[in-house]
Image (cartoon, rainbow, N blue to C red; front, side, top):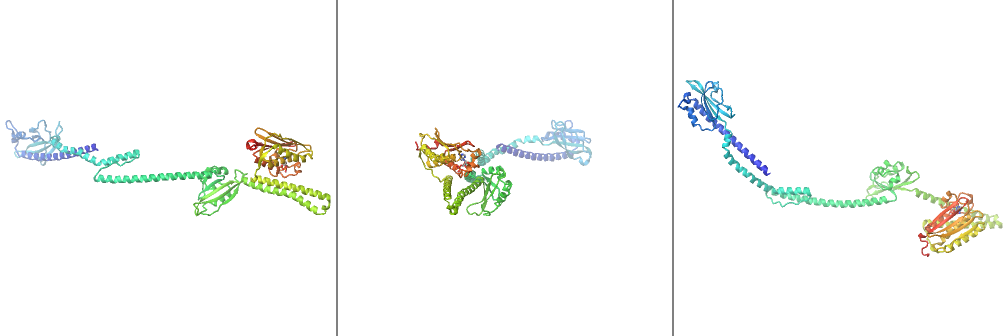
Length: 604
Ligand code: ADP
């Protein structure tokens, strides 16, 4: 800024001096012209001899030379009609430039600009005719240099005295301006610091006048902006906090939806899928990217499901109620899936629908369970009907003429007695099994000496078997640790195994009951040398009502509920039931009660 002011002041000085110089030069040129014209006219009226210096006489030219003190005077020359110089006076060092005399009488008196050979200076020449005896005798030529640098040098002190105050005023002006704009400078520096560091403190700006007013307004403006920025920052941080809270809640809701056992999708108001949980892609056999952001008709190939879900597209408030359809997915033909749709509403008013929740469930097992349940009921009915038919048949026969026969009456009553026993056993087994499966059976654990329990059960059962010519063997050590179990349930299990070992044995066969105590477990084994089972049969013997498809089995009474009961009893004691069998060689059922399941607790 200081440099600029110096440059500006120098420029002003230069302009002023140039203008002054041009003005003075112009004035001087006018002066020379007036003087030259006047003098050449004066000399033109004189005779040539009077003008010329001859010998001692100086002539007018000589006088002129002596008296001429004009600094710009160059020469005075008398020339003849052809322009040859007759007499001349010159300023020292000046060579008169040759010039032809004017021919036309109208141009005899005039002026012209010439250049001096050698120095190259320009001059103005005034010329006029000289008459001799009334006729043209020659010309007088007066030359004056054009005023130039000489005059500038001459006037230098004047120009200097003029320039000096201007030059001195410049720094003063500069300091005054600088003082005035200092607040602007400070504000600018603060703004630069703000841009670099992000902190802004308004400087103390004592200023008056218009700059003071401006700075006052500027300060208020900045304070207002600062307050606005602070307000925006606090709003921003508030928004950030609520965004975090919202995204946390959203993440929590999504986590819940992902953890749900069912696969689900959320359709927005236009029917486009806006969310799917992790289970859906696997269940539908489609990648998530093909489902998310698309409408069901874009990813579902089952027309029934598409038609069902389309009802929920743009359904509006309460347009369609919750509903369900079942379908088989193309990628897993053995599965049955159900899809149900539940309209979603904003708030409790149910005024505006915000989409639909679509739940997909794999109901294959559920359906199989329902089927098994229906089969079970049919089996029970069948098993009940057979003895009831027998009972009805015999009772009717007894009431008829056949009842008169003593032999038939005894046979009939025996059959009725046996069938009633079978029915009672069937019903008791059914009840026990149902209670096991519903979890309603309470275990009554007590301290039991296995030797006593097993020997007692064995003796009761073996009695009936010995009549059939079977051989019985028991090996249960007396010193076995007492166990903490449900005595009645274990007796049922062992009874069933022993009954089967007798029932499915062959004449002269062997039935063996053994028990062993190991470090980690107690093992009870019921072994026979009977008809045995194929591996295929072994896979099914724990299904309710299963009986092998052969005459040796079908000829014997039974309902296929004994082994499922044994399995439940062992399961309740956290034990294991193992079958080893070979067709026509015999079977062995082993119950393992592991000690780490607490069967020795309170028993020691
Ligand atoms: P049930 O004896 O009343 O038929 P179970 O549930 O006790 O019913 O037995 C189911 C089936 O398992 C029997 O029908 C039979 O086919 C087979 N089974 C059970 N125990 C034996 C065994 N010790 N030897 C051969 N087959 C057996």
